[in-house]
Image (cartoon, rainbow, N blue to C red):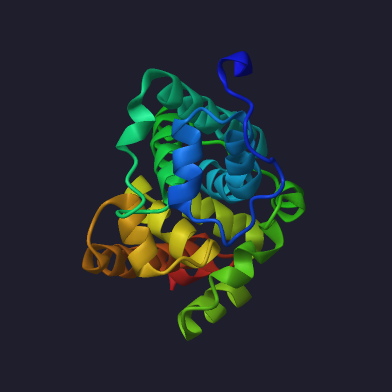
Length: 217
């Protein structure tokens, strides 16, 4: 497949100062090394997002590869030219693709990753603490919950709520970035986050070790 590319460019020399516009232009020119730069720069971010969205390291790995296959196909058939660096980032473009794949996968099944798997995954050790950065509510939730129950509660959220939790809390994106990726307003992101917090708090209370005793009181 890569024989189709020109092979121009200097893989490994693209640093953070290189703009998305420059990289996008190299991609449109079918620069093989530009695609490798894109993959190296953003694959971990895409993979972390998909781990939290799917709850499975295996599924996340498969979908991460599929994201970049979709980009390759877009480059070959000319659809990648629709990407506009003035309206978003390449990372946001990739996460948008990942979001659609995660929703498709969620429609098939929901599988939980083990506690050990979450902690061993790239960025996984921050999964619980990341939810404690917004306000005291998150601190209380994390203190009262173990990672397994927290992950399960996140996976049970409707996709449009789970997406904002993953992006804004677990991956620490701003509401502005999340709005651009999810193609909605910042107000919508804020509203979904507030609703997601309430749903998570309720799920963790009802699934806690003292939930049965509380309900009987």
